Amino acid sequence: MELVSPSIGLIFWMTLAFSLVLFILGKFAWKPIMSALNERESKIQDALHAANKAREEMETLKFSNEALLKEAKDERDALMRDARKVRETLIEEAKLKAGEEADRIIESARASIEYEKMAAITELKNQLATLSIDIAERILNEELAKSSRQDEIIKKMLEEVKFN
Image 1 (cartoon, rainbow, N blue to C red):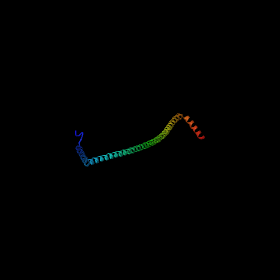
Image 2: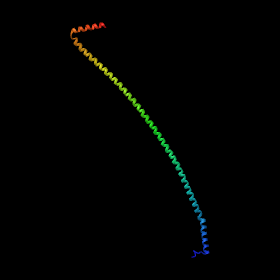
Image 3: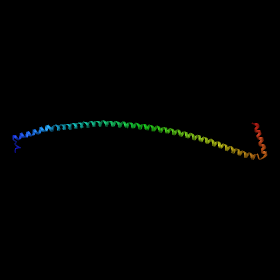
Image 4: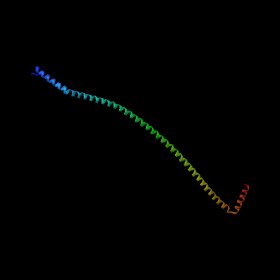
């Protein structure tokens, strides 16, 4: 029961032991513990500061990435517009060349047709002339087979020559 109602001696020795432990802890333990706590606190502050800085950098990079992405999209759109213009130009040039080539082919075909037509007409004229000569020769052979008829034709030709 001495602990419930302590005596002066017990209080003295307890105070002395507590002071000794407090002194030893103050001399050897409090400084390293406090320096460790301060060091830990500074590391935590540095880590928080670094995290805030990293967050700010991430925001900056995010905005930078968005700007780069927008710039890349704009550049892609410009390239697509240029490609469409080039495609349309090439199509127009191809249409013009095809039209010119078609006109040239048509003109060449017309010239060829005209040439073939003239050749056919010439051939027909030659055949007609040959047929006419053959017919005239046959008629003359029949008409001139009779000598009386020969005399009549000669007189008629002489009269025509005199008039001309």
